[in-house]
Image (cartoon, rainbow, N blue to C red; front, side, top):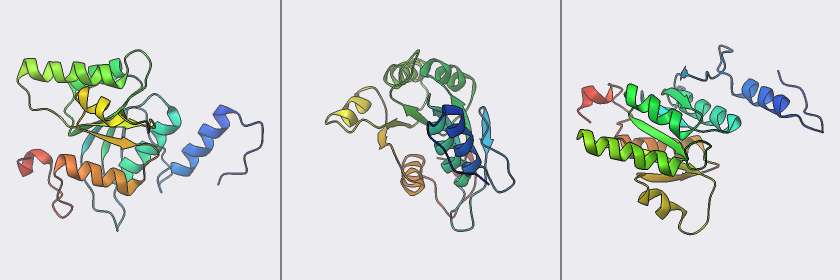
Amino acid sequence: MCGPLTKPLRRHQFGDTVRALLADPDGAQPGRAVASGRAGNDVPALGLRVLLAEDNEVNQLVAQAHLAALGCTVVTAANGHEALGLWRVGRFDIVLMDCHMPVLDGYEASLALREVERLCGARPVPILALTANALEGARERCLAAGMSDHLAKPFTRAQMAQALRRWTRVDPVNTQEPSERGA
């Protein structure tokens, strides 16, 4: 159980507290490389393989917890360059891309990913932009970079589930793998 946080708040204390709060019922905490979870009784398992590109550790933990609760397997990248490397060697149903990351931001990473898909003749993987930017034109900038849609931070588990279902055509009743569904 977590105790109270005292000021001044240290970054590691905050991270430890968030990890403890988001730990699954077995006590395991979301992993950096791959975190697999189960959907609760009231939430159908989506069974998606998700690439999460997010540099902020707390945002990673929150997204991983939501995705694990939705029955997704998550591979996490800390920047756009790392995300491109993971995408090239893995098979993902969807990419969640933070727009503002070090090394290679989400806009540049999405443009590069789309170019590789184009050159290889591959079917485009859905890319959902994750951004706290609520300024006018933010969604349009994401779409111009080749992203499929925009999910504003902070988002709820329900909003994430809705976006995942919309872009992966997941039938909540059907829990087959996307390749088995013909999607």
